Amino acid sequence: MNSVDNQCWVHFLYLTDQELMEHCVLDRFRASGPGGQKKNKTDSAVRIRHIESGLIGLSSESRSQHVNKTYALRRLRLKIALVLRDNDQNDHIELKKFIQQTGTKTFTLNIRDPRYPIIVASLFDELSVNNWKISVTAKKIGITSSTLNKFLRSNPEVWRALH
Image 1: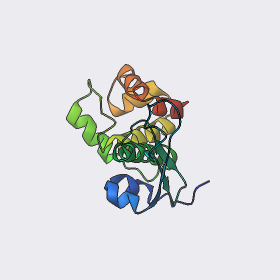
Image 2: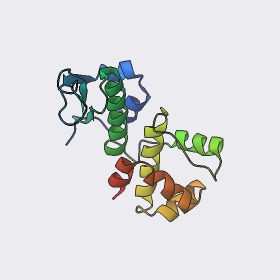
Image 3: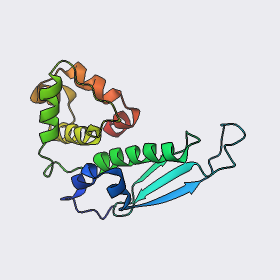
Image 4: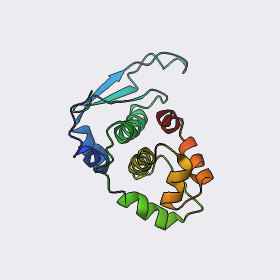
């Protein structure tokens, strides 16, 4: 399926955008669909393919290639976190720090936050260990099940990957 060594997958999540791009191929293309007269006249859509894993981040919603590149990189990082994660390799340090910082009542994190993919991967690892039971996982990490459920549902891609 992918050729990335499970021991190094988390490394990609800590790279800067520029460093991550060194492991990727960038394709620019013209997007189809609504968007006005300029939509089909410029190569503003962006596809970023991670070479080692073959995972792809795609964005075409903005007319700006720069903005689409940012969105595509964000989506690629999340896919790396969801697809390449490995229970044995993730020590959940970021998740523990995040819970300490935010407290157990408010467990919210913006998708733009660089920690987001790491937190999601840690949560998925915990869920996997707990047979994908939200209530058991929430209790184990010290938050309520409704708080964890709300966090997981806040991003449709994360919620789809869960099911």
